[in-house]
Amino acid sequence: WAATLCWHRLETGTYLALAFRSMVLAASDGKKLDDLLSKLPLFPPTGNVEKDSDSTAKHNILKNMIRGCLRDQSFILPMLSAYEEHEKKIIQDRASSAKRDEKFQRTSTFGKLDKSFAIKFIVQRSDLTSKDLSEAVKHDPETLVELVEFEPQLAPSIKMFDKLQVIEVCRRFMAARGDANGVPLRDFKHSGGLLPSGQVNWRRGAYTLIFTDKKLTALTFRNGDQVVVGGESGVNDDWALIRNYSKWRCAMESKPFPEIKLHLFFEKDKTGPYRLAKHLSTRAREYSQAVDAAYDAWDAAQKANGAKPEIEGEIAAAKGAILDLRTQKKRQQLEKARDTAKETLKAKRARASISMKDAGAPVL
Image (tube, rainbow, N blue to C red; front, side):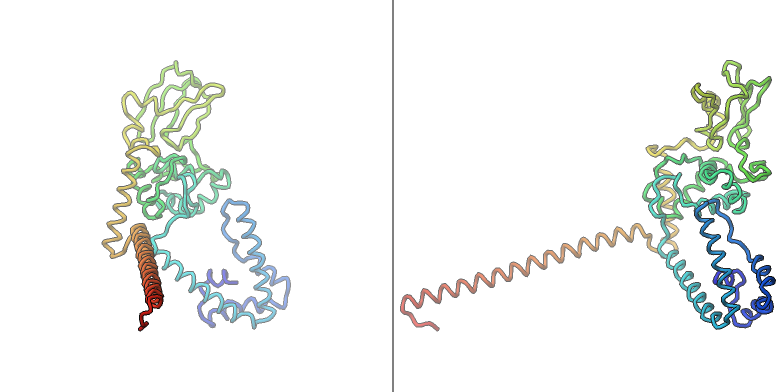
């Protein structure tokens, strides 16, 4: 029921009454009520079997809650109150998250990026919609990973440095890499990147193959550069085109023969993929430099807005904690030394008193 309220943005009792009007009229007729509930919007599919199964169960729960409210309207206002409280908490959590400079939950490589971040990034950088992505994932669960690689040309095995754990830094870095590679996703859908079935068409990826008499005779990179391939390559139309979302890892394959990387055909004249951004790996100096540039740009923006970067704040907090610990230890050491000195002085006075007694001197 909370989801229904959210969809219709019902914030007052008047609108709530309007929403229930047709339902209350249908409540006495079970068939009409079932017909009405059958029109209740489904939760959007994600392509994940487990999540979609959970959504179906929640949708059925939602129907039962509506039936319950129609049987006994005393449930309605308490549920509205609970909905408003929950909505308020969500808004507060989002505001708090924005202030903290939201981070990933420790993402190790680009191949394991958060799916919601991946979808948002792809939609922002392309002419694809979230609905397009939802349909494409049904055909191939790896679609998001492939599209994310296609834009910035970052292999899924590349490790993400600590600075990239800040979501905005990661977005800036990936966007800069996408720009350096000519924004591959810009017109992806318009240029035939989606098949009528909704599946991604990777024949419209980094390279286009040209065959003559079933033999590979030419290669065209997506920027328009073309190379003529001699017959000695031995590649024919029986070979499979693989990983055409990566200009560096794309290859022709026909087992048991070794793969033939397509970027090698452009290496001599430094055309095609070599005209754009260089290949990056985890150990490449250019990679760490690009990450630093993205972080510095974000850092400058944070300082311009009067915010204190979280990473620096964490370092400062850690230093403060260490300083407090050191101060506490020194204080404990001083107190212990003072107590020891008192005990030593007390013991000396006691010994002096005993000696004077033994000498027959008066004790004061």
